[in-house]
Amino acid sequence: MAAPTCPYAPTDFGRLYELEPELVRCPFPLYDVLRDREPVWFDARLDAYVVTRYADVMEILRDPLTFSSAMASGPTSITGLAQRIVDDPARPERLRNQAARRLRMAETPVLLLADPPQHKRQRALVASAFSPRRIAALEPEVRELAATMIDGFAARGEVELVREFALPLPMTVIATMLGVPPSDLADFKRWANAFTAGVGSADKPAAEVAQMFADIDAFYDYFTEQIARRRARGQDDLLTDLVHARMDGVEPLTDDEILLMLAQFLVGGHETTTLMITSMMHRFATEPYLAARVRREPELLPALLEEMLRLEAPVQGMFRSATRATRIGDVDVPAGALLWLVFGSANRDPEAFPDPDFLSSEARRTPHLTFGRFEHFCLGSSVARLELRVAGELLLDRLREIRLACEPHELERHRSFVLHGYPELPLRFTAAP
Image (tube, rainbow, N blue to C red):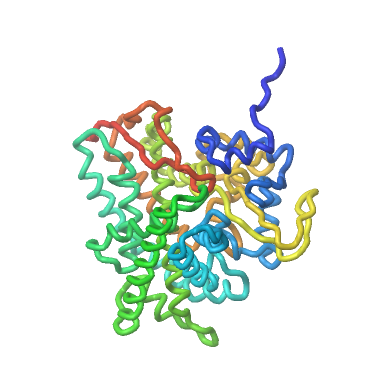
């Protein structure tokens, strides 16, 4: 009997880029093919080299001088979308003007999009705002907030988890860290949607893009005023830390740098954590033995969460651009080329992770790449881990017999080749006595 053949070929990456539903739902078999056959694959549709092996991705991340982060969010980001609009004379003039403003803001590279030495300076000034002391001080507030949210649906026996928990929990935490009052949370969410709407998806209608740009402008206007207020009178929040960050011999952060950092914190501080909380609870709902084991042995939860982060990376990858002609594996890469580093594939590389698709309850020796590595290791990773751990502890403690409230095939994934997760997760359960 002939062995079954894989339904994919490296050329099928274009189908993922074009958001074919089955590949968006589960891109991992395609990643397997790419790693085995074409680990550095040039995809004409993406106009980038797709890098899928752990060792190759690590080599690129180690060398920020050769591989720039200036286009880390790639051509499907807000900046990439703005560039395409500016370059298209058929677009309405007002929309092109809005897009041009986006490009002017992007001329100031910050953190995720910055290279040495600028990145080193910015990170040094920001690092104290994410100190272990500040993160540890967050836990009682995160725990109280999560418990209050669970109180709102536990007795009901069902919940759409994203709307009632996975989204508002990290959203409220990052808003609180930035000193945003509860009355402005609805605006906060709208702004976050605007920054993420174009990530990993095709172009959108002009009216929708114009609204995205208008919401982003509102975000910048709001925080421009807040920066001025913190400069005049500080508060105990992250924004004040950024405004007053000082180091001997180091130039302070400019207002534009702070605004662009806040945009990154807004997206990274809630969108990715929302996706990860949802993926975690999908696991517990579809693998009830796993939830039962954690209740018996709660000390296993941190290692299991790291494995879930590895297997279900909410951001499947980031871009880099080659500053000079170089070679990755057996492939020559010209100067200026764009590279898509597929963390979601590297995290399942059998050369780095034995039995890579297995969810281990023991810590892996090899670090996963979900939070990046080296220069650009995620500043907010400790906040995300805190929120994920607290959410897992409280949800498993308060809810029993957790299960999907729909058929598995009815769940949709985000329409993105970059963001990976469920926009909705309906659950049923029994409230714990």
